[in-house]
Image 1: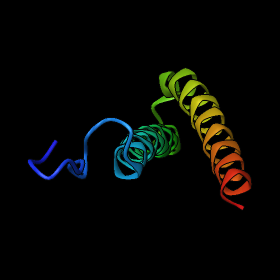
Image 2: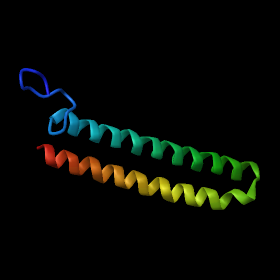
Image 3: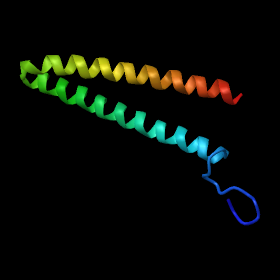
Image 4: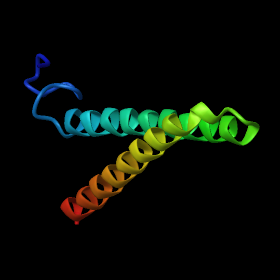
Length: 84
């Protein structure tokens, strides 16, 4: 708290603090989505080249990627409804 009694931008209870948490969550989900998507893509390329043991990795990575994308879309829709 400042000397004049106002709050700093990131103190608990401010709008910026709430949005910071949302933004950090968005960045984390985006990173997870990119890593899983890259893993699925690289696994699929490995299968196409002839590495038959990659099928399990491709299936798991693609499933996790799908789950993360569905969760992200649901979170974005929920956030859009709350802001209206």
